[in-house]
Image 1 (cartoon, rainbow, N blue to C red):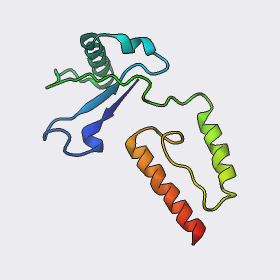
Image 2 (cartoon, one colour):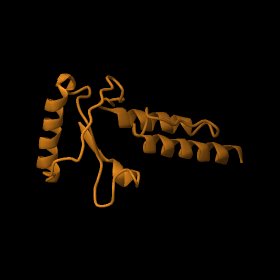
Image 3 (cartoon, rainbow, N blue to C red):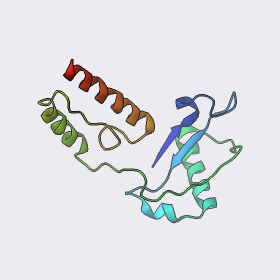
Image 4 (cartoon, rainbow, N blue to C red):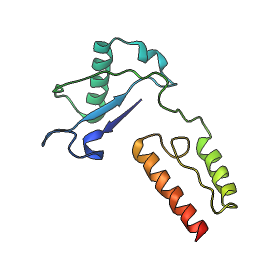
Length: 126
């Protein structure tokens, strides 16, 4: 479903000369993949990373954690809906929205939207 370069987003997550990848499997479009055993899931992820990124080296370690229904899945039309909501919000100088429901589900996205919401509110009360 997705792969992040965790060691690029957060320096120090991998030793010098290495990268830490975090892969996401399943989601609302392929929920059947979530039921694969750990070995099969790891093999499938490694095969996809080899095809997409030419990553062929064996990992120094791999771990599988399962968090069912833990990542919000945006539906078709989500961006347009959020734009309409934000347009209406412009009527209220001290009201702003933040979090995973709007512009990204990652921690960095949530922090960014929180900072943007705070700036909007500060401008609205200034």
